[in-house]
Image (tube, rainbow, N blue to C red):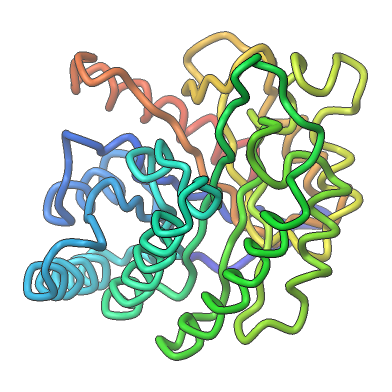
Amino acid sequence: MTDDVVTGDVQSIPFGINLSFCVKRWVTPELWAPLVRERLGLDLVQFSYDLADPMWPDAILDRHAAELRRQAQASGITVHSAFIGLAHYTFNQLLHPDHDVRDYAEQWLVRAYRFAALAGIARVGGPLGAIPARLDGTEAEALDAADYADLVARMHRLAEHAKAEGLAELYVEPTPMRREWPWTVAQARRMMDDVAGSAVPWRLCPDWGHGTFEPLYGPDHGAMEPWFRDLADVITAVHIQQTDFLLDRHWDFTVPGKVDPVAAATLLRRTGLAAAPVFLEVFYPFEHDSGSILTALEATSARLKQALA
């Protein structure tokens, strides 16, 4: 990863890309590493478990982990972290109403930690789970106390497993849904306080399209600034996307939206987060042609690199 550079009073913000754009396309390191390094001009990535299922047999996982480590080193790419991806996110994970399913989701993460360690990836994270919707469609303002206590207990256990694998950090990605946790700054602070002192530190990775979701938070809530200002001590990575604040779009920056890259960089520096790597996280329809995706990502990467430099 490129070292932080300070020019005058302006610190360069580390910038990379989440490999979400590779799903069902550039699915092996032999395919995505040259694209990241040569087409996009980046040397920092966040791996997605949409490209490797932790529940594959050990022999397959071990081979893929070894190849990921080898290709990244050969390409001069730092794999900063690994996130759970879209496929696993669709399940209710650690907050499923069936505790046996929660146990399985916990084991899924334990195996994700094992893969990361073998691949030379020091951090793993993502959203943790979702409670089911109610029959009448109303949504609670908070998790049931027993569900929350169970979640925190699992986080402490997971940290023990992460320590055994030699990982450095675990991430929670807040999402803009009442069925998930945390979805407010206060909830995120409480969770970080409740897992403080765990065997491996839990940290936050906020997403620009989550904290700006106006249907949940309202148009005057301050967007990302309260998240960054009030939680700066526990934020060590950030996701950026183009969005309209009406849905969690995950557009690239060739699409018109409300996120201005220069203003985003200014906010990160003002809130003391210039050292936290920022990862572009974009998703495309599977039927979208691959050539136009690469063209859009080249333009997007160039624009964000310039803004964050």
